[in-house]
Length: 154
Image (cartoon, rainbow, N blue to C red; front, side, top):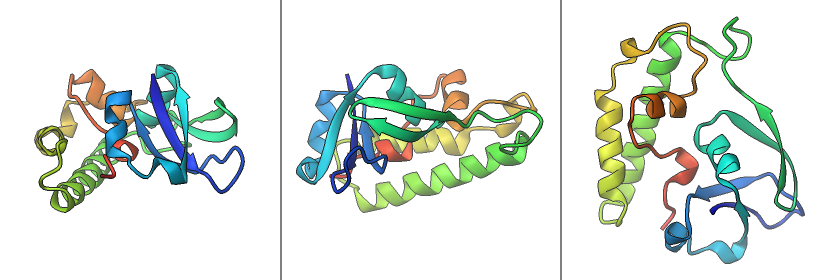
């Protein structure tokens, strides 16, 4: 099972602090006592990891979602190479910031490997227009990836 950490200050908060894929990764979120930990199924976990949905409501461990799939008509997001280039640049900078702040963390080698893959990724290899999110593009290219909410906090 996977886990979401929510702000504890509000009942059924949708303020998502972090996500982690399994109980082994719990150790990297030591401030769990100030957050509400909710066990979630893999399908819900992937909605956040892939950035294909936004959490709009919650009742305990039941969620309401809004799909943010890229609209090929261009109404919701850009669907061209500029979108993918922007995502690549943003993800790379977030990973770089995390690596610099956590050089000796146990997950740093995995995150560095992902950053290297991001930096080497060629956006021109994606077919445009695309309806894929960054996470889906990574999956389609067999690149193991982390979303920003998944980066360990400790």
